[in-house]
Image 1 (cartoon, one colour):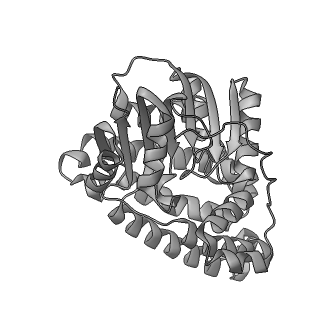
Image 2 (cartoon, helix red, strand yellow):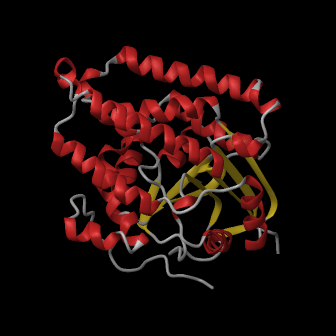
Length: 325
C-alpha cells in the first residue's frame, strides 16, 4: 500500500497543555505522546545533554556500528522515526552515514526543533508530523530508517516495523537504538525516583534552599512525569525485539544491548540535573558526568559484557533488512 507524501499542513506545536488536556491524555496514549513531547521539545537537548558535535556524533555512530558496522556508506536517503530533536539522524548524517534525510515525529514541537537543528547544521533534511503506525511516505522511499528511544512509545510496535519495511527500498536497513530493556528500565526508574525524592526533600533544608528549583517548576516537572508514565508503554527483552522484527517481515535481524554501570550513573545524574537550578551546575559537573559515563561505558563493554547476560543491560539496539524482491 502506498501513502501520499504530500498531505495537509502539519499541526502546530502545543507546548503548554492545560490541566484538562493532561487529564484527557492519561487515558489516550497518543495524545499523551503529543502533549509530553511538545512540552519537552524546546528544552529536550539541554535536559539530555544532546549536542551536534564530536561527542554526540561519536555516540550516535557507536550505536549504529554496534549492529551495522560493515554496511557500505553513505546511504542515499534516510528517515528518522520518532525523531525528537533530530539527535540520532542528524549526528549520523554528520558522521557520513546518509546524504539526505527526513525527520518524523508525532509531536509537532519535536519536528519543528529537529528541522531547526538540521538547518543550523546545514544538512539536507525535510520533516513531517507522522504517526509511526501510518507513516505518510510512499512505498520504497528510503534506503535507511533509524530511530532512537522511539519503539517503546509506539502502541503497536510490530505494525510500526511493518510500516518501516514498507517505506524502505528492497535491501534497505533499519536501526533502532536506545530502547529500554525490561530489567534495565526497572533499576533506572528506581534510581530516578530515589534521586528525585532525595534531592527535592534535602533542598527544602535552609542552607540548601538555593539549590531548589522554584516550586512551580517542580510541579510542572511532576505533571510531565505523570505523562511520562503514560508515554513509556513498553520495555523489551532483546530476543523479543528480534522476534517482532522477523514477524514484521525483516531479514538479517540482529539485537544487541549496552550500558549497565553507565546507566546506573546516568539516570541519577540526569534526575539530579532536572531537580536543581541549571546555573548551579557548571563545566566541572558536566565533565564529571560525561567522563564518568565514558569510563563506566568502557567497563560495561570490556568487562561486564563478558560476564553479565545481555538482558541486564539498559539499552537495546535492533536492526533488520527489507527482503529483496
